[in-house]
Image (cartoon, rainbow, N blue to C red):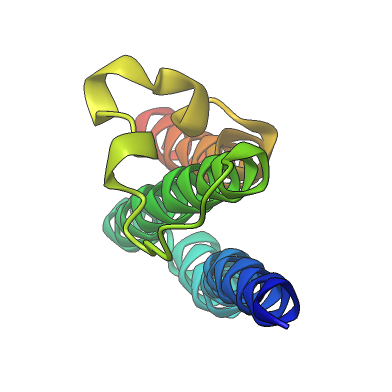
Length: 142
């Protein structure tokens, strides 16, 4: 009977970790969903009004939300490592703190350069830089 309770506790613990992973992924997707209309409006206004400052605001918003998405991805990976440790561990400690699995920022540039962070946010920033360059070139030509 104690083994059944222990197995059920173990399943619940793994479920808690899975829920944390799901929340991190969901929050990163929410950031992307909010960013698209904001940047579209900023870049659109910048193009229509020839305002490189507004394009710069769009780039800044993208960089801030990209940094936050990288943090969510970093935490998600730490919880995935915690999940792997919980599966391989002989005894369950029911610890939800991924601190031992959370890598320092300076050592994990792979999070910033991942396709889900740089591939999405980086391409939006590059688009903003192109808009700024086109506006600047148009001003020089005029």
